Image 1 (cartoon, rainbow, N blue to C red):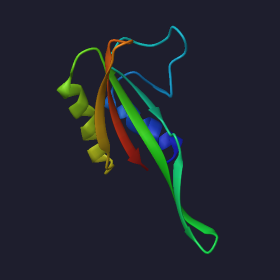
Image 2: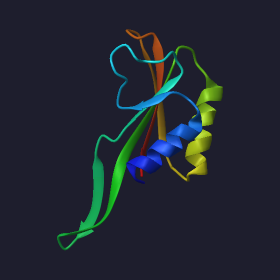
Image 3: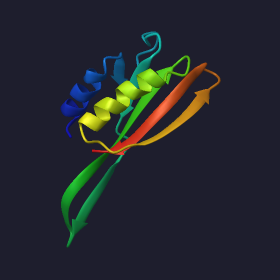
Image 4: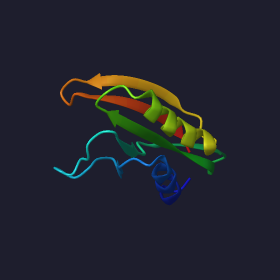
Length: 105
């Protein structure tokens, strides 16, 4: 997927979002999303790259546990046939839950 295709997919979720971070003082009230591509895996042989898989992290931030919001994100990922691994942490300093969806596209 290209950056533009990923951006369009994230828009379908219907929450405020940004790539990597929001500018200082411009973070919306939760829930909101961040997405980033922290790296890339490639497949190749004989010194040729045949395919590249971009790592994609989608971070959902909420101020309270929200299974309905998580389901909305997961529905969009399933509609786009994207396999993901999901984890969750409480960020004490921010008083926010982060639900992380890690995938490759």
